[in-house]
Image (tube, rainbow, N blue to C red; front, side, top):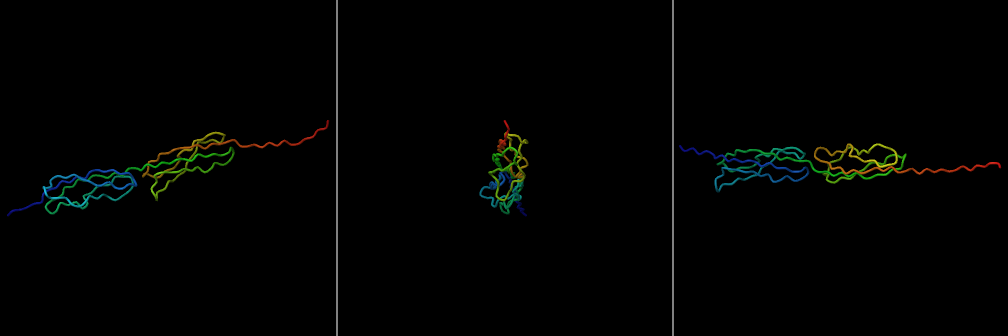
Length: 170
């Protein structure tokens, strides 16, 4: 009796990288052991998830037909942090008044994500310039923040002095 066995096809996934909130790259592979004229069909897939981290690239639906047994070597898709630019707005206040709200603008935040925390400023209440710092602002581990600071300027307070009229006998 003649026994025909399947041929082993070696397929190795190629590691890939993408930035959070971007499209997945095309998942590719290398292979050896495929007979001329035969072909591989289907596609790789990956473990689900969109946050920063490492996700396994799996065999998915790859097949070379019933004549082959696939020996598959996995790889990883690594999702890296997205750059997020935060720029503080310069503020001014008059000496002996309350601080204005410290505000900022941001570029690069994915719709649906949010920035938490508050800006902070260098301490001091006298006339002068005080740096506005990042404070506790965070967008979570899916972002790498580039912070552009600004200053809070405390200006002089207008003091009104009114002399009282007086009389004196000569």
